[in-house]
Image (cartoon, rainbow, N blue to C red):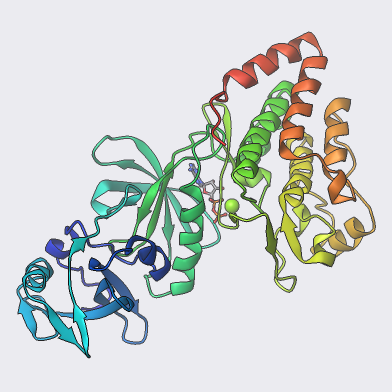
Length: 399
Ligand SMILES: Nc1ncnc2c1ncn2[C@@H]1O[C@H](COP(=O)(O)OP(=O)(O)O)[C@@H](O)[C@H]1O
Ligand SMILES: [Mg+2]
């Protein structure tokens, strides 16, 4: 089958067809002897999709190629008009392949996050980023609005798929009003997709650029508080985001949600490749020495993001400096000057968050509490603001 050629619908529609599900994800589902599924892989050398029967046998998980033509599906000494019929015949008759007995007992169906191309419709481009393009779309069944993050490679780049799946794996863990909700991933055919909650207000960075000085201090404080609630939730889930910045916070109906989990990891410490530094302007200076990111590096990035939230007009942090100068200066202890309109209690919190000693920075929970205190202590209008901020985020946080 050629790259662009579609796989037969009858194969794709099998409940146990998992498309390009990666081995590590498939292996978690194939647990008992005889568990099986069909997977697809792009073979970049021949630029073709290949289908495999993945099955859990006594000696471990095996993947056997199924030779598919438009009219036949072949495996070992068996042949059938399609994969469903081939699998049915294998279930009734054990086959030996290279000395191993292939016994099919239980078909593993797709999980709740595994959607299919036919479940979504998308057209309008919303943005683009690291590995793909983001579109606005709808779930075909419920007509619910969604955002679709599309992997721009034609399925022949295993590394990009791996990146996309890292994002999918962590996002599956979350359910919080200040985190962009994950609906699922689509691997049944190319292009591969992530399906996310649609945020109608775009990114906070775009909002800051567009509205400029018109955005009130109160709104900026509310945005800060929402983002802190999202990060507190992530850190309680033992995840570090690693790319906290105004461009990665989205707005939906005036609620700020943390987005872009491409760099997020479900671990307390994550080693970084210092030869390939990204987001230098948000990167805590000690990372250059210890080569590790952790929860307190997210807190440092949060401080830089607070600066972004209050600087009028919006500006990239240290916009006058090249990346290497930012690195040099921040390692030397330099920090951004406080934005003019930033209330002193916000300034204090920002400075605590970018403290030179990572252990002196507040935890996300402390940060959230400090923000609540600061808002409550502020002017009476700000107190109303806290009530507003709070009512917009859920109280039923799951830890
Ligand atoms: N759920 C969403 N709703 C609306 N717009 C989105 C959504 N996700 C992403 N976008 C848009 O696409 C851009 C890139 O998305 P992002 O997840 O940050 O990708 P990348 O990892 O490539 O930076 C965002 O800045 C935003 O404009
Ligand atoms: Mg991004």
